[in-house]
Amino acid sequence: MTRKRRAFSAEFKQQAVRRVQEREAAGVSLVQVGRELGIRPDLLRTWAHTAPPTRGTGSAGTTTDLEAEVRRLQRENDVLRQEAAFAKKPRRYFAKELR
Image 1 (cartoon, rainbow, N blue to C red):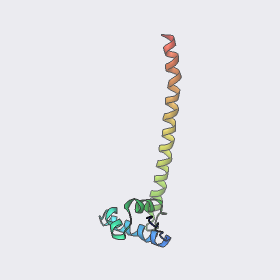
Image 2: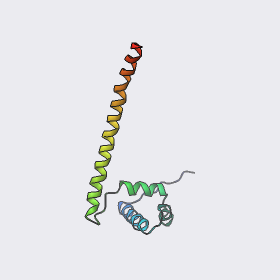
Image 3: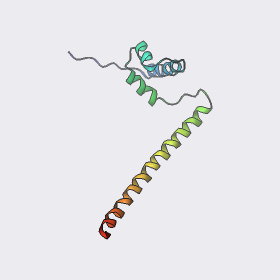
Image 4: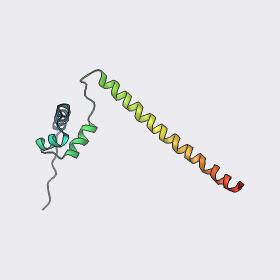
């Protein structure tokens, strides 16, 4: 027997994410909130990560901007590390020939 897939409205998802944020501020885990709502914690976590940032305080936008900048710099750093590692390979090859 197949299980019918449940569909959740956008309003329900927003309320669930808001509840997660409020309850986590009070020290309640995401797993517990999921149990209260009858939703798997991984689904609730996905909704929380994909939800647009709330406009509660003015500093939230700044934090989001800073986090985006940090992610951009980390990606740039990864690319530079890969380029440096690639540049070392020919040096090693030619250094072996000279020996």
